[in-house]
Image (spheres, rainbow, N blue to C red):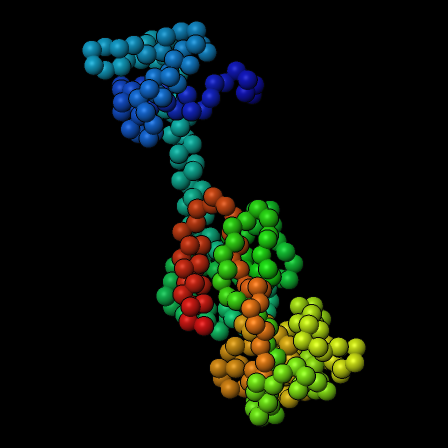
Length: 292
């Protein structure tokens, strides 16, 4: 197809509506533009084709013989586009909502709560895809992602969901009398981190703890680090959302916490996309985050 021979889609839409409705004003109302805009689009088509497409008959506008073939073809073509669009939207509404998120957030924040979502919204199917890898929402076919960091991800809309300042936690049975301890007072304990926990190490260093001089146990995941802390092995440095359920349950105690952290778990979505199921899930995430 040689698109250079085809006039603008806006002009074709204006002419089709005016021809079908027999009125520039009616077409303007349907397309939410001005009467003058419709008239200008029709004139541009007449200039493009070199023939008159519409003529006034009393108070109405009629399609000329030359314009009738184009009018019929456009009405059929736009009807096909509308039908295909509705079919595709229907498929999108029926498929599972694809959510990319970090494994730690999935296991420790979302999964303890997700049962409530399924009870409240059984009509919304979810496909949870845990991974520490950054995803391209469009290329990877994701509806939204929940990511950990300071923001600044390009090409997406970002909404902070849960602040994720770090905490130092220990087993309640072993450390309940150390609540409120400073880093200096905890020096000499076994420090528990996960291999990906560069933020936690930085926090410790800024607080005067040199891991080169301390006893440190590193685990493959934040979940393993948390479980090691529950077992009384030492003091774990972890994002608050990873341990909040264990703290509420009384299995861990917070010894000290990071103040004024700009790290958070955030919701990432593609700009300009429409997804009722996604919006339902995001509203639910917000309501759960407000509960703490």
